[in-house]
Image 1 (tube, rainbow, N blue to C red):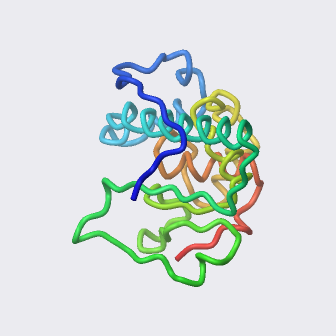
Image 2 (image 1 turned 90 degrees about the horizontal axis):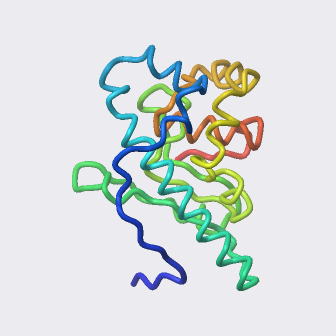
Length: 178
């Protein structure tokens, strides 16, 4: 079922370099959040790093093999169990676009980190989450835009996905939720 075309192995990172994030606005805003969220910083950075690494491996593979994929599917299998699951509507499988799992039950606009499906060119731009943190994490205009959507401009998995998407594409017009 799973036959990777490219992969790398790395040991877990125990401590992420502070200089990567400590001077960013998103980090300073995180420090104003509840302690539980602050305590989740390492986990969030780890997710960002891992998704970024997958993006880099994927980009290298498609460029070196001159390969094109209609869509890229990103799933967090660890968050699905018999109590929390969803089905992907069949109609989105054949459509081109950006699809994410809805955050409506939270009455929020963030991009849920359980599922994303998008064209490969969107994936390449969107998921360099860790490498570009210092750039988009300090963008004051972007902070205003994120706040205009009623969301937080800080380092948290769902917010970072929203922040980076808005950094690259300026709006959520192409994002479909199910």
